[in-house]
Image 1 (cartoon, rainbow, N blue to C red):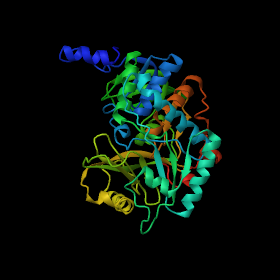
Image 2: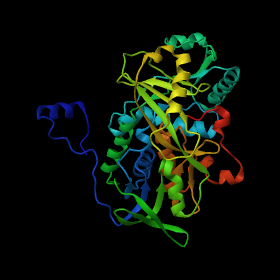
Image 3: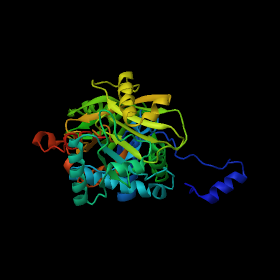
Image 4: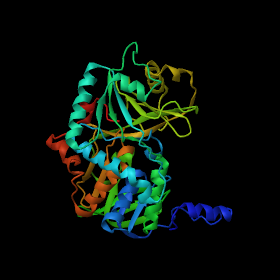
Length: 414
């Protein structure tokens, strides 16, 4: 794999850009791999990458039924933060945030990480107490956050209206090193690095069955034929329950659509990420000038990727109270992503009842920010059978009643 650099750009410019090679190969599948990862989104590709980088396991296939990064990785609002209350959550998200900071250099691919800061508005007294508690917890966890006043909020975000008619801004939890990254570039960068290590990324290859013998996984049936493997990782976001059913076990989660939209592009008006959980909306501005707006999940189970109009209406109406100027914008496009929701709104990174089969799912509405930390922990779990990052997120926690309940802790798990 040729390295990207300023010199490479100059060289290719001189020869009309005819010398660029494909970012990743598209080979035909082999009959056997040491590890098969189902799902070529950010989490699946990160798992494969860290298997190779950290443990030297490179006889790996990443199988995707559609196109690389075509699921939730390409259908989110790109927020990166680690200011969670629970210790286990803060640990894996802070690992992810720190890996994002050096990802472009590590992958030799610009993922456009922008540590512009993430602000979580407190608009009720309950939220004030909750976010102040989170700030204290983050200090103990080594996560750099702080509680800021309404005046400081206004300095960082001049377009905000502090004295909203229903929900005035009473302060905010501020994480200066949070931010955003280019979601597609994260998937592309990991794919390129995996391909350079000799791993196979196989697109348009749906898994139709999971093979097992005496309680141990032996391979998968796919649209391109049977593939045997020693270990299997299921990393398929909204369709985790479908794959688990093929493997013979059930998961304590449900699949719903999560909506998002972008406005027409405008000149720069905000250089931070803002989340308003009371009115349930979050917003940032993209490099192209679009206002990237996220809202709530559907109240019913479904597999649609379109979203529903009433959620868009509710989200925009709520945000207009705090940001009146966005009422004059036109919506450019909207979409939905299929998310796995567990009862405690925390992920599952775990061994499964099928020996040799591992699962990574249940990220709900906060999967993008966790990609590198999730991949790091999942790779360690698959390679060694144990990872400190994933220990609290095993399937057995639901049977034992030791939930990692971020929905109660934060009121929202975005």
